[in-house]
Length: 232
Ligand code: ATP
Image 1 (cartoon, rainbow, N blue to C red):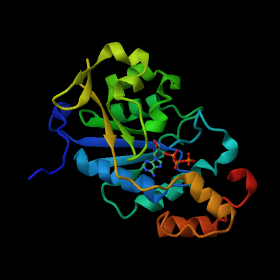
Image 2: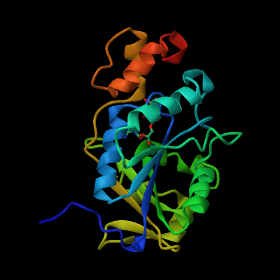
Image 3: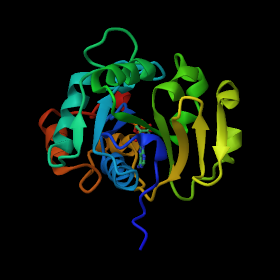
Image 4: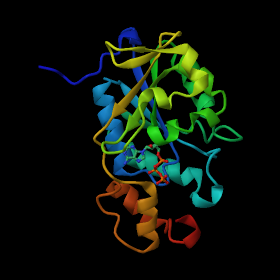
C-alpha cells in the first residue's frame, strides 16, 4: 500500500528539516494544516515556523509587532512535537530576507537536508527576493498550491534566472538542481483560511473560532489585537 510519502532521493538518510516562513499575522489553522501535510508527505523530522520580523514586501502598517506574531506562533505549535517556532528573523537587524534565514539554518544544522516550504503565491514573486538564484543551491524547495487554485504549468512559473540550473526529472516529478537539491510543486488539500480573513473578522468583532488555535484566539483577545481599521 502506498504511504503517500514523496521519495526524496537526495536527502541522504540524515535529518530532514522544513522551514516555513510567513508573516503569520496571525498564524491560523490553514498554515498549521498545510505544514502538517507537508511534514507527513515529505517525511520531515521537524518544521521550523519562522515569522518575518520586517518582511521586505509588506508595509509595516498592516502588522502587529514581530514579538506578538512570534508569541502566537509559539502558542500555535506548542502541542506539536514536530513543530518549532524560530526567532531567528527577530534576532537580525534589517529586512527579513529568506536567503539569510536559509543560510542561518544551513550553518546551524550541518548535514541535515533543508526543505524550504513556500506558497505558490509567494514563489511567484521569488525573482524579487534577495539572492534568489542561490536559494536552490542551499536547500530543497517545496512550492505548495491549494486545490482549485488555477496555476500555470510549472515551466511557466520557474523564474528565468533559475531555468539554466534546473531540469525536470519526470520519474520523480520534480525539478533538480546542479547541487543535488530539488524543487517540487505540491498541491496540498489545505484549509481555505487566510490571515486577512481573520483580521477582517476581528475588526468586525466577529468570532474567529475554528480558524485559529484556541490559545491564539485567547492571546488575540487578551491583547485586543487587530481591532483598529488600519490593521485590517
Ligand atoms: P495574508 O492573508 O495576510 O496575505 P496569509 O494567510 O497568506 O496572510 P502568510 O503569513 O502570508 O499568511 O503566509 C505564509 C505562507 O503560508 C505563504 O507561503 C502562504 O502561501 C501560505 N498559506 C497561507 N494561508 C494558507 C492556507 N490556508 N493553506 C496553505 N498555505 C497557506
